[in-house]
Image (cartoon, rainbow, N blue to C red; front, side, top):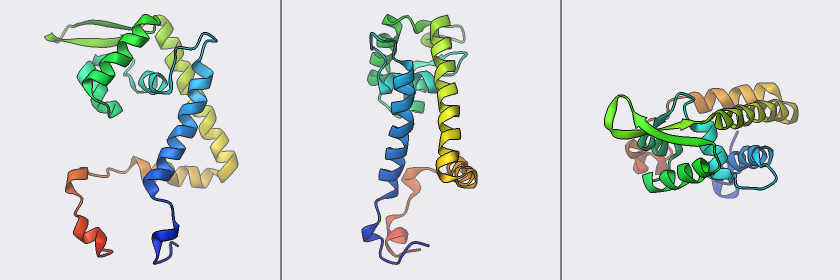
Length: 156
């Protein structure tokens, strides 16, 4: 149980970021092809992209980056032969980002590495803790704009 004084604890956001980097670094190392080219951000994009493709704006939103940043990453991965940008059959105004066959292979590899890392984490900290962590992270956290700073400052 946490103490009343949280000043000695690291912020939860920092711990989550460190955990995210642990996963992302391992996935990136497995995706590199010797010539480089696949960055941690690229690995995140490959794991987040719907296998059936998705509009660039949806991809940016899902990754939590700006549309120009997503656009740049997509075109870098397209240059590596992992993605294509094609007309959206549902909307003449937008384009879909889709995986190439090589991109599908890399995405599958990334997801397999994530599964292996989750199993490794269960070995390190225990399956029950990993299950509890997953359960907590799968909960709907709500909109960040709805967070009332006065209630959290009062310990409510």
